[in-house]
Amino acid sequence: MALLKIFQDKDSNFRFFLKTKKDILFFSEPFSSLQLCSEKMSYFKAHSRAEKNFKRRQAGCGSYYFVFIKYGNNEIIGTSKSYLNKSSMENSISLIKGSRTIVVFTQILWLTYKGKNLRFSHL
Image (cartoon, rainbow, N blue to C red; front, side, top):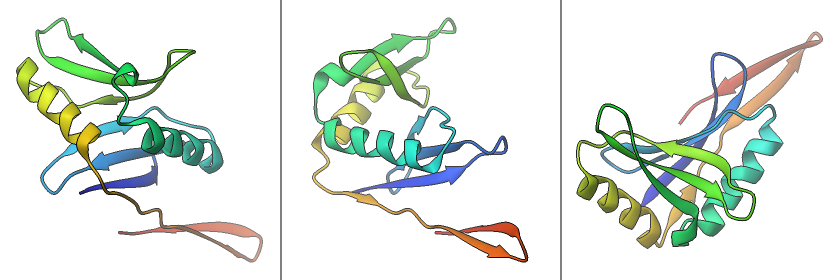
C-alpha cells in the first residue's frame, strides 16, 4: 500500500508525493493551484500501471531515476528519487505499477478569518 499526499511548498505551489511505509518514491512537479495538482494526481493514480508513462533516465553522476509523463504530450507529472543502481529503480517502478491500493489522503483545510485565509495541513 502507498500513500499519495498533496502539500504546499515554500513557493506556494501545490505538489503531491507517493510514499510507501519506508520511502518517498516520487514527487510531482509544482502546480499553481490545488485543483490542477488534484487533476494531475488523479491522472497519476489512474495511469500508474501503464509502462508507457514511465521514462527511465540516468543522471550525469551515474545515478538512476524515472519520470512519469502524461502519455501523448510528454508532460512531466513528476520525478522519482535517485537510485544507486538500475535494479532498485526498476523495483520501485514495479511496486508502483503493481500497487493494488493507493490511498489518496489530502487534508488541506482553509479557514477564512477576518478576511485572511489561514491554511492548516496535517497527516
